[in-house]
Image 1 (cartoon, rainbow, N blue to C red):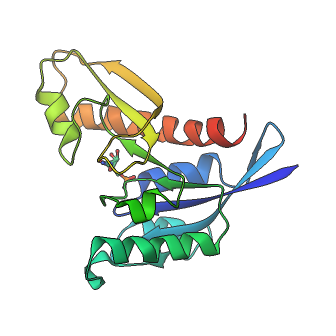
Image 2: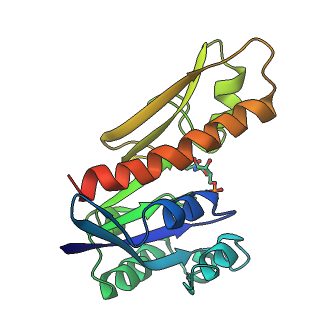
Amino acid sequence: MVTKKIAVLFSGSGSNLEAILQKVHNKIFNNVKIEVVLTLTNKANAYGIERARRYGLESVVIEHTKFASREEFDQALVDEIKKHNVDLTVFAGFMRILTPVFTNQIKAINLHPSLLPLFKGAHAIKESFESEMLVGGVSVHYVSEELDGGKLIMQRAFEKSDDMSLEEFEEKIHAIEHEILPESIVKILCK
Ligand code: GAR
């Protein structure tokens, strides 16, 4: 059996980090064991730190505010990730735009709460809820220099019902995220 190592980067609540820890960490798929060897955040108060701790993982904090440029911050991320020899880096609500310093050195995937290429950016949930579209959805894609660009790996859509509130729409998005981010990791590492 082979072991594939992943790093998970997050900035906030970390519910997707927790989905990864629950569904794929130390689990075997097609004779491949997946192990989360690094949890890393750019926010010292991110709740994901607590969630990781419950699984015995102490997160590394690298605050972007402490760096003079995006490139220097990105290099610090690269240095930390490279120490752990990972096969894949996963952005689970990691809210940073990356420069080529990162994207040229690290193979990473990102989760986004819309059907890309629609509704890129930080307000995807509200914008897709308010749009005329009759479906909402979630995308997982490779990280590239372009914000929320990069080749798509997996998408899942759902129908908006007429009486759906923004809160219900958001809940549905998060439920799908918790399915397709772990599924994407397995698809990439264990097929
Ligand atoms: C998720 O909804 C994810 O799609 C979004 O941040 C949230 C993180 O939630 N990411 C982006 O918008 C990236 N552009 P979590 O901290 O509970 O996992």
